[in-house]
Image 1 (cartoon, rainbow, N blue to C red):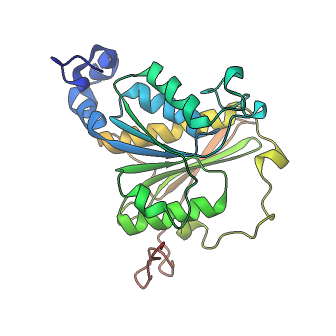
Image 2 (cartoon, one colour; image 1 turned 60 degrees about the vertical axis):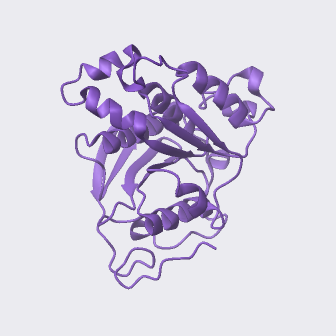
Length: 260
C-alpha cells in the first residue's frame, strides 16, 4: 500500500518520470488511473508487464493459464528456476508486487478466446497483445474493435519482430493487415523455428513504451504504422498500414462479430 498522505502518482519512485518536461506529474497521474490488460505472460508479456508495473500503471491485468517451463527462462525474465512447474500468474504477481506494490494486479487464469474476450477486455483502457497463437490474436482484435479499446500488437520469429497499434477508432485493425487467420500448422511456432532470447524482450519493451505513450498522450503512436526490426543487422523500418474498406471487422460495411 502507498502513503495514505500522498497520492500514488506523486510517489518519489516516479521522480525521474516527473522530471521529464514532456511527461511530468500530469502524465504520471494518467498512468496511475489507467487499466492495462496484458494478454499472455510469456516472452512479450513478461518484460512488458514488469516495465508497466515499474512505470506506475494503476491496474495491470494479466491473462494466461500456462505454467513455467525451463525452456521459458532464456527469454521470460519475470520467472526463475524456483518457478518452474508453477502457475505463471502466481509467480508473476509475486514479482510484480516486489517491483511496485502500488500497482493493483488483476489475474485472469484463462486464455483469451472468442467466447470471453469481450467480457474481459471491457474492463480495460488498452490491451497489450503478448499472445503466441492466431486464434487469441484475432479474438483480441475483434473484441477491441467492438469495444473501441486499442491494442498494442507484437510478434517475434527467429531474429525478427513487429510492433503496431490496432483498433484505434479511425485507424486500421489487425484484420486490415492480415485479413484471415492462417491455417493451423502453416506458420512455424517459436518452439519449432526458435527465437533469440533477447528479441521478445526488445519487442515487449517497444509494446510497453507504446502503451505508456498512448495513456500519457505522449509522442506519435504506432497507429497505421508497422515497426519491423531485424536483430541480425540491427535494422528497423516502418510499413504504412491503411484501413481496408473491405475489412470484415472494421470496414464501413462490416458486421462486427458478436463474440458470443
